[in-house]
Length: 255
Image 1 (cartoon, rainbow, N blue to C red):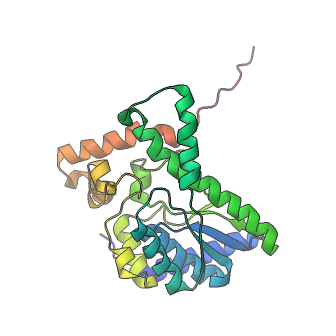
Image 2 (cartoon, rainbow, N blue to C red; image 1 turned 180 degrees about the vertical axis):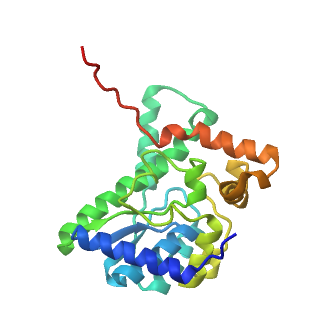
């Protein structure tokens, strides 16, 4: 396996960000900060590329753990960026109240819908704030994505939620590589090394997926190194989520 050079990768990503911002006359970034490693690393990259004055972090609690907001503040304090809190709990609850007009549903029936509603509300909020601050500050703010290569391969994201963003910085890095980027960027240890979770279901990512991120990374490099059972789990996740990547579009047939 080729040695990973975090310093070189950070420099390349920063160059990529600056080039894209210059080409499109952009001014800043509105970043959802979950208190996890991915958003922490993206925060560090954006500050290096744009300056702390051009990055706004946002916490978006929704029946969430207080610890996540505390960890997000660790990130914002370290990098010196503004951090705003926009609580969407009441918005989520209003949505759920409206659902009662359609009938009565069991907790199991609404479980998946509820989990996916939260990132969709969060992304809508980030884009609202991006438009707001663009007007207030007179420069264009965009919304960066935080998904990494392992998450994307198995489709561990929400359509219309964390799959929506304007620039993607970690999509070609495995979880282990993201941690190495974070070590170079001095992301606070508590954030960088904590078990990844969605902050929504009270389960770790790996519990939900049924496979470990290290196994996904190994699969992407050389799947023959994995046991058949693990390979098949990863392949099933990938196949079952392919619909998230492409929207089939019917084209009229010529008569």
